[in-house]
Image (cartoon, rainbow, N blue to C red; front, top):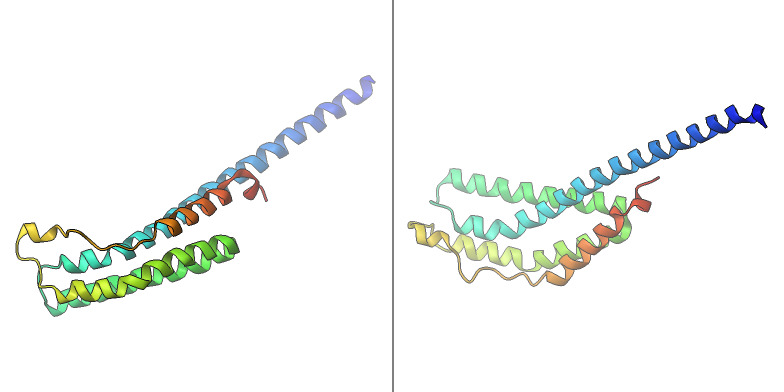
Length: 159
């Protein structure tokens, strides 16, 4: 039995090292996923904020129009990227994110047109926009967050 003691110690040490390696890798993958999910939600929020940003413009020059067009384009590219990335990560998560973005898109274009039809802000008080633009995306947002949390659990990040 004494002869097996070094072997048992070596096996236990190897198993501990392997477990540590797997858990550290899982933690790293979880942190990366968390960052990606936060970036995806940031893109959604920037998209939702577009009508407000456009409405708060301070003049109607070609430079401002160019800046607004670039802003719209950048947000749409970010949304398209996150749609594909989340669908690759997990089909069901991609579906939930698509549903959230689609719900916002239903009204966003009309709200952007409305914002651009309004005159530029000339007074500080005009920067506050009330009652605001309603997107009715609460249920889709909750479902997307639920699926993100599900994919952040440890078992989804081990391998």
